[in-house]
Length: 267
Image (cartoon, rainbow, N blue to C red):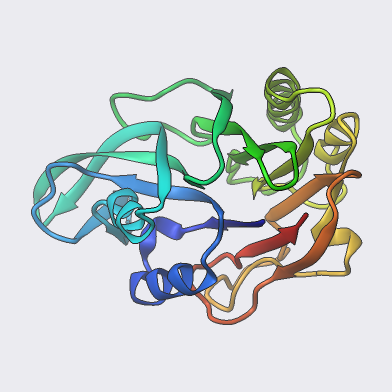
């Protein structure tokens, strides 16, 4: 089975991202920073925040869902705010997307907020609302249930060090996984956690028997050349001891976002 996790950056590198996802052909796709704007009449919209303007795909969720017709598609919005087509405002949702190959039946599912609550009337002030999505699937060939969770951790303009909000976020994420999993499940937890390797987040998740693959396998960078700041960590993938890791990579090329894809092959 192959799981791919990526902060998609609103699809800003769409022309690279879509071919990469198709070629990677993952069984499970966990994307963060995904847009959905059902009433858009153009492929690109503009996100405006103070003096910052960023191009965003109008409906990245629809595009990726169309790329994977053999997958079930789930969108989990964290907020609804305005994107712009010129000076025209369009209400757009932003959040997580999960795509599950239909060969794997979904036997459990949950989503919840790890920070804040759903923001229906604007993006809000930082740190903004963040959510997590958990699916429990069954692999008939292996006669094994697998619980897969991903989240987008809160962004704090002050940096990625632990804060009370981040400690609470970790506890909520762990609780959601714990309530969703079954006895003997293989566990995978991934996403853009927006924390550094010393974070207490990993001690909290270790209580579920989860170990990070990024740091324990010697990777020192989960960002691409399009991100010019330091430190270079944001994204992680953790597994339980009963996950037989066949291959794991923090993908350097192609650059499809300002984050690198995390790709796990396991049995």
